[in-house]
Length: 103
Length: 248
Image (cartoon, rainbow over the protein chains, first blue to last red):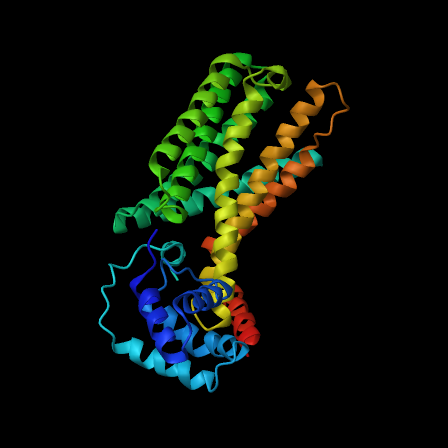
């Protein structure tokens, strides 16, 4: 299954911001997403924002990126207004169980 | 005493199934969505037809064999249908994008219903059914539907727990999915225990079946389902506080 437009966009932004090659950027982001319980094929803009601000900086630091928090924060700021062809929101298990419990 | 506990476990499971089943079917009528319909129908078929009629069949085998036979057929049909509803709920909720998922689920459901029908047609209630070659495959097929649901739910709950660590998601919903998974696991273990008990006797080993084990697993499943779908305010507050503490 194809990766989400949000994931593709963020990978490109990460390549440009850090100098990582395509493989390194995608691999780094996939690892961070997995650790955060998310998947590249379904990650949404809101979820990626949280990942960029709270999980990616430490991963970038480990890979020798200076000022990782501001690099990741800048990507998140740009992502917030980026034009992306996001599909309609799907009925995720989370959404279903939220409905089932009346939460 | 043991019989009382077993009956209490069945009564608790039936009561919880009735409450959750009716609530979810009412929700399905409002939303028109499949998950609430499938899970609600699964609860009503299993908890209001499958379990009670199976208990009645076992209780009446000696004194009213013909009535027991009818109750057994209804009980088995209820269990089979419940399992199929739960299987389809897995497909709709946890595996909507699975390649070939529709064909796989349809084949799986046909297998469960076919084996259940064979049990209805070829076995009588009471311990003698354990020696029939159709009974244990039907149990294994039914167990598989609960197992796949339990695995998918617990895997997803684990993902949600990790999302909570970065401030994403609702801890109460994450807990609900975990409870749904644990309930599915308890029911799967119930099936596997019954299956193992039959197979052990068939190969001539000493019997391992004890109603207390089934009762405890039933009470565990019912408690998880009740906490998932009818959580008290205090319980949800505790879950939220624990999540906030974990993030702090």
